[in-house]
Amino acid sequence: DGVQNIISYGFGQEADVKISDYKVQDQTSSAYISMADDELTLKLAVHGTHSLANAAGALIIADCLGVNMNKVLESLEKFEASKGRGEVLLFGAGNKTIELIDESYNANPSSMAAALAVLSQRGRRGGNRILVLGEMLELGANSNQAHLDLAAAINACSANKVFMVGKHMQVLKPAIEPYSEVFLANDAKQICPQIVNGLDWGDQIMVKGSNGVGLSLIVEAIRSRFAGA
Image (tube, rainbow, N blue to C red; front, side, top):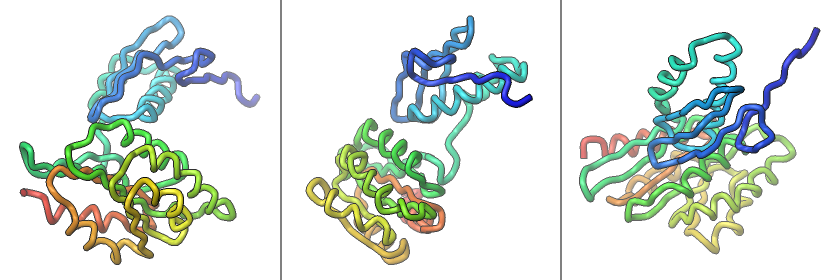
């Protein structure tokens, strides 16, 4: 009874299922997946090493269930990030564009770190790089430290402006101010006009926070302002 088989996976050599030779670009990710005697080529239409790890986990489950692996790989290649969960939107055309990365649906320490890591490796568009970060809710007594732990990842993004929404984000201000212009707000509605009105062509903006913070309001305001521009 109990667990009969444990399969580890990841980027390390000690993993049972290894992710290697990975490449992460602005819109795609790819890697080789070594599973038992098989060497699989994984291609995704989403970016980030965390996406590759999630896909590897799905492949393992499919393999255990006896699902045709080629069909699984084809399905994964067609997968697209959904609204609020990493969807990338581009407004404008040619040299006049604004890129919005919508991560507004959820945030916890690991997903926040992953999203920031992806952005830090992402190409810029020539204008400002802007972060809109909402507080991570329901972290209890560890909340302040969990937010402070994001400082290095935020600074690695080299953002020109960082908008922080919610009382728990305020502890980060001293650690971010030496590197970026910082703006604080208690709620999304308060800061939304300043963010939207301050956007210009060439800007790149990522919005991420717990769903309860309501940052989707800012995403929808940007959509309304620039869609069809």
